[in-house]
Image 1 (tube, helix red, strand yellow):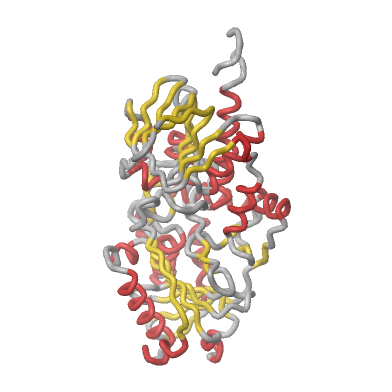
Image 2 (cartoon, one colour):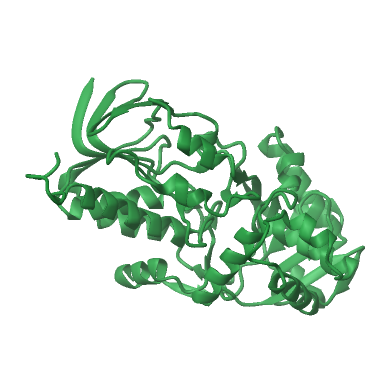
Amino acid sequence: MKHATDVLVIGGGIAGLTVARQLTCAGLNVVLLEARDRMGGRIFTDSTGDFPIELGAEFVHGRPEEIFGLAAEAGVPIIPVKGEFRRKVNGEWDDAGRLMGKVEKLFDKMPGKGTDQPFRQYLDHSTASNDVKEQALRYVEGFHAADPSRISVHSLVRDTQAEERIDGDRQFRISSGYYDLVRATYDRIEHKHCTIVLKTPVQEIRWRRGEAIARTPGAEFHASRVVITVPLGVLKANCILFSPALSEKGNAMKFLEMGPVIRVVMRFREKFWEQEPEMADLSFLFTDDPQFPTWWASNPLPWPILTGWAAGNYALALKGLGIDAITAKAADSLARILKISPGQLQRQLLASFVHDWQADPFSCGAYSYAAVGGSDAARELAKPVEDTLYFAGEATNFEGYGGTVHGAIATGHRAAREVLDSRKPKAGLPGTPA
């Protein structure tokens, strides 16, 4: 079966939906193809219970207009994250705030110019204490889901400067669930100009200037332009075959990596952990646990949940395990950290929710980061090809906001502008391109 439209959008995450919104509001006909049976991509909210459970994106980093503007437009509530940062190493509680202050100073000293280097190399030459170095490693591996031996110092400097422009040291939550941003974007698509097809993975894109065909298991979709918004991991795994091949994109992706993450959310009868003074009013908990070292609570929301986070090498160590085995290891980790028996934990536990993003075939990881020498790789990945192929998604954000929802939204706006600009009459040429 063949279908024809003005623009194909590949991927129904927040970037793809943003593209569809912008193009349909400009009057173009769009077909959006999504491999999953749901919209949202790496925004994945379980809303089956009394309150939302985030299995993908959860935090709003800083005050980006892309999110705060959309939330204000749609009446979506955003609240600041509250609570205390805690740290437990070798079974002992420590002052997390004091240590993180020293880690921030270590990051402030990173060189943004000269020869690029991996973060671990920078750390090896630092005069910081071993305690500070260990916490910095855990931060890079946890927050960035990155291999410290691979991630670019120059990219970390760029990202830190970008965060400062949007008050990035503050964190927020969408109290009604992150999916409300997906719904807000979806609702603002001009649906008379848009067809959304779920459960339709694209296997091949055959193209030439001004013409493209996207092939799926059951159909072909034709358009003069295609916007590809699938995650970096899917592109790197060659899940979509491009014909002719895109060698420039392949070269760019050699300097971009997809961070592995496993996330476990545990719902309890009550916030029993707050009975311990060190755990009262908890926000984030950093530990040296060998399996799930990072945990956080829902404060200021009253929900009795704790989220366990295994990123980078911690996630790789759990690769291939099933949901039950991952859940059991997370429960064991939390029991060790809290110094309670597994039986005590199980008596409080009502439900567990797990998503292994590295094993997700439509993501192949959580979010992207730049390897050494890759500070400009996202810009190369983002460049349009022959006014026919366009690229969006967080991995194509070259302004320092890769790995974030607002960064993905920004790339959707950019790609939509590129498509619209390509249709305008070119100087010295008659008419308007098809």
